[in-house]
Image 1: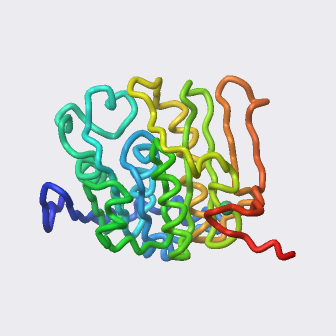
Image 2: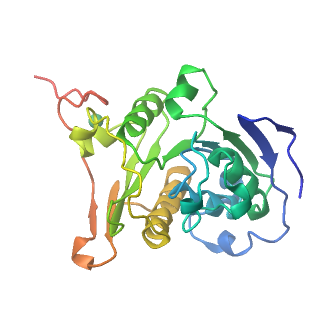
Length: 261
Ligand SMILES: [Zn+2]
């Protein structure tokens, strides 16, 4: 395992190692291009429950670069569902997850971790250039910040979230143009609440939502088929599953669609 080329309390940079032949089976997937995938850069907003079920899979598929941004600290209650170990307790999540991704790699993936909130990273001028972002945070102010920032940069965002009762979750793909997360959830724009500590959370629903998000990443980078921009999955009842194409909402303050006179 190759170790960090630079480490500090607030950031880390690591690199995966090539495992010859590890990508053999995914070569056979229609529309999947290892050449494209291993040049692609993904920025993960958050490094907790949802990203823990997305980032390792991106590394196992040989993503080119992955950036993690999170200011939270690993706590014992995270270990039932997040890619951390008891030795990570007390560490910053972005730093610890970056370290834990190294053995997940099959390619020379560049792994960057930043101990920061997205809003702070944007204000500080951190280079967040990427091919797409994945937003797996637990609060609406950060979702809106991600929506605004990446839309202004022409970068698509895969938003993912699970319900407070851990029964259902969704993935929404905010493309470079067209509808944004606030077109889907108008009330999100003015919601400055943060989740209460102690909310139920478990790995099963995170895995289900994470799988849809990983697939959506492929569709944004390559020619794998996707006819939706919103998917919802409900563990207890298939009637709660859903698929839709969310359209732009008139007067949306984030994407400001022009519906004319
Ligand atoms: Zn919008």
